[in-house]
Length: 302
Image (tube, rainbow, N blue to C red; front, top):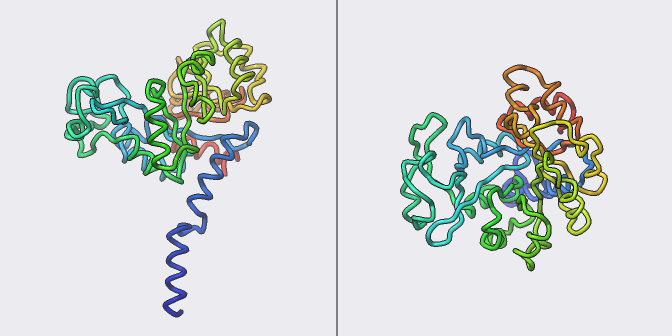
C-alpha cells in the first residue's frame, strides 16, 4: 500500500467513521425520520441525557446517550447574566451544582467555576455546559430537543446558525399558535417546531387544530394524566403530517404507562407497548438503554 493510498484511506475514515457511514448521512437520516410521521422507526429521546451515569444535562451525559444510539437528546435552556444560553433545568443552580441562586446572577465565566453534582448529590469535575458546546457535541450525530426554550428562541436560533445545526434542533412550547406567531413573527416559520399539549384540557383539540391548519408542526408532545382522551384513540395527528411525542418518564405525564413499569416491573404491555399502540412514534425516556433494546427486539428500530 503506497503512502498516497494510505492517506486517502485515512481521510475517508475520518469523514465516514470506521463503519463506513458518514456522520452527515446519519443526521440526514434522523432528520428525514423526524419529518416522516408514519415511519415505522420509533425514535428515542434521552431525557437530560444519560443522567443515571453522569450528571444530568452534562456534556458527559449527552455523550453517553449518543454512544447508546439515541435519536434525540433533551436540553433545558437558561441564560447567564451576560446573555449566554446555558443548559440548566431548574430556575436555580442549587440542586445540581455547588453554587447558589439563579444563572442570571452570574456571567458565563463565573458560572463555569461551579461543578455539577451526580445523581447522588456528589460533586464531580463536570461544569455547566453552554448550548453552543452541546450543539457542537451533537453536530451531525443526534437531534436536540430544546426544552424550556420559549423565552430564548432568538438567542438559541443565533447559536444554531453559528454552529450550523439548525435542522437538528426541535423548538417547543405550550403556547397557542396565535401567541407563538405574535411573540416570534419573523422566526416561527423558520424553525422545526413542536407544540406541547395537555390533552386532559378541554381546549386541547382546538389547540391541535389551530396548529395543524396554520403551521403543520413536526410533532405534537402530548401530556395526559388520564388515558381516556379521544385524541389518542382517533389519532388524526399522524394522518395530518405530524409525529406524536409522548414522555414515558413518570406516570403523571402518560396516564400511568411509564418507564419504571417497563423496566422494574417487567411490564411492557401496559407501558411502552401501550404508548406505541396509541400513536407514539417518539418516546422520551429516562431509560434509553433499555428502551433501545426493547424496540430492537420488537423490530421497531434498526
